[in-house]
Length: 342
Ligand code: AVJ
Image (tube, rainbow, N blue to C red; front, top):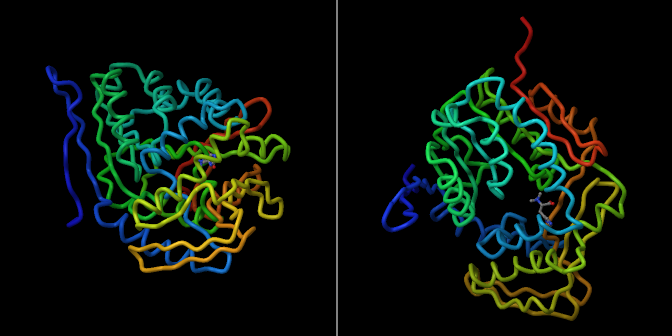
């Protein structure tokens, strides 16, 4: 806990209301990005972990992506949430509503609206994200809408810092937006396993999964006509420039996104459109790319009912309920820890 820092955020001068923010990332982010860049850009297929998309600008760009006509996941998931919010929030009294990878507040608002003011007054909302700016924006919005709600923002890498979050049960843990698709299969299983090991029988986990559908539909979602996804993809170069004193020129790269059927995932890459030499001063690295060579920047796995059931099983989670849209483009799955029958 030595890396932990606390600060408060004041929204409005005359009427200061504050949200508590715990930052467990101080120092960790800088160490991680240096190590990850050294490792990823030194590999034969060069890659950068996709968590580095999300600086303030990247988080904004992702918000924009969520509103694009081609990007179906957000609105499809929202339409399901709208249908099921009452059922999910009505079944039992939660203490902490935890959102891993806090995205747009719209989704969580759906759940909070369905909860109703009296029950909200006893609840605490805990957004967990590596982007402090994203947390602050969500928290400010929610504080304004729900004055009775407690909000604790946690700046952390939830894939490995879950245990540091001071959660009070019964919990509703939300992992929405198919963010789980960013993990490799074994990573997602061990992540779900660590969640199930850390929660109690009364706690619930709600996970959003983007499902396999036609290649055209999936590829269009990552190749929007306005080029926002391309900007988002290239933003990771700005992050490397800022964090590691690198000299990338984003215009030296083209955006590439396609469905890899064998791996059942959309892959995003940045493809060099000429031979490139770049210095990353902060890690004393010189990088060479040949024209046509790519940096792999993201995987976004697409799931089937079977692949989700297999994962839940291997992670020790039992599926309580399954919710989809009429086209089965997206699934929200409510899970609880599996307890051995005695
Ligand atoms: C936030 C990881 C779910 O994979 O669809 C959107 C990120 N990347 N467009 C996704 C993303 C390109 C998004 N996730």
